[in-house]
Every structure is written in C-alpha cells, then in structure tokens.
Image (cartoon, rainbow, N blue to C red):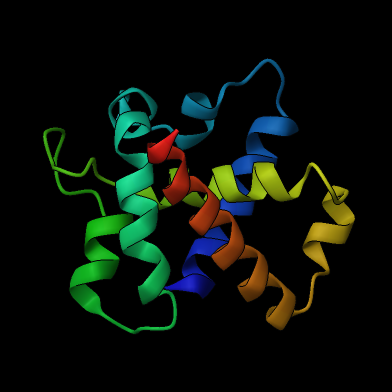
Length: 124
C-alpha cells in the first residue's frame, strides 16, 4: 500500500503545485467532491491505513485507490488525496527534487509519521 500511496500522492501534489491556480480538487479530478467528502473522514481513514501500509491487499487497495462510483463510502480514490496531503506535508521540509529522491526507507518512515499525525488530528 505504501508504494502506491507514494507513487500517486506526490504525482497529484506536483500536478497541483505546477499548475497554478489549480486546487487539490483540480489535481484529483474525480470524484468532483472528493476533497469535500473526504476531509472530515481523514483522521479515521489515515488511522486505518497506517497499520496496513506494508500489506498487499486487493480489497484495501480498491477501497483507497479505485473509482467505485460517485457515492462510494469512503469516497472513491481517497488514497490519492491522502497521498497528496502527505506529500504536501513533507514538502514543508523538503524541495520537490528532494522529495523525488528520498530513499524508500525514508519514504516509508515519513508516510507512517504523517499518517499518524493525520490520525491524531481527530483528537484536537
């Protein structure tokens, strides 16, 4: 899961950054309300995803990355949004070229840390 999250998240984030005034929703494309519907669910989704980052699981992959219709719960393709948010947070400390060249062990560590932080935000 973490490899897909990392492959798709930064790609979405860079698409937004490199195409101003694109919003996160513009970069995500579909569903058109992905950001709006996903934002309140982020802490729970991140908390569920974090302990499963090292798993290969078709159902979990489908839940986070496939388009499952406009009314899917959680919203279709939410993994792209979560990955882009993680990349956006990592970009606070790193340039885009640095992000592109992070070694896999560092990427995995950063993903876990950021997902834990997003998961804790429900407590605030």
